[in-house]
Length: 178
Image (cartoon, rainbow, N blue to C red; front, side):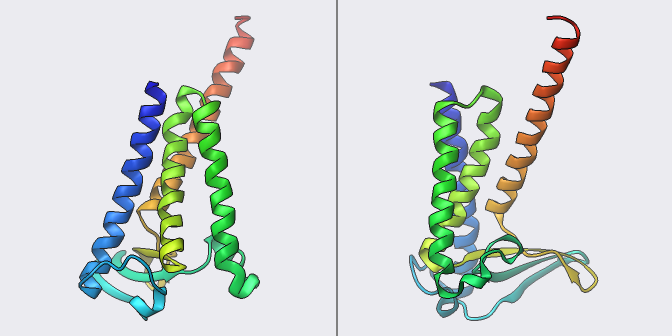
């Protein structure tokens, strides 16, 4: 039961933080927070919101695709395909999380699921994801990202670290004859 409560809390917190940050940006730009609509009809062009320092800006941009422009060749069916695939991945993660996961997997998988759900909400609402964090060096910009993306990356890093540590612990136990 404790595992379930932690998972639900982390997932819910991730979604709320992600949607609050994106909603705040929409409000600052449009004066409201639309529930649905075509992304480019709501905010037609990406733009610089605030230059924070030499390597960081707040921007507003829509991401209609996925990481590294995957699925861009699917044309107009891409948003539907992305929503369906994302739904399946989220369903798999949640099923594993609530039925088979170990205690050390709960927070990483919850961060990944919460981040994926946050971005899925945008895809369903606007057919694109809101990205707003822009790191750059000179004219070279890392692709803009959001709080959901941060949670997914941290979740994956924690998961990989846990797998490494569990494997290392298992190898140590085997070596020691335990």
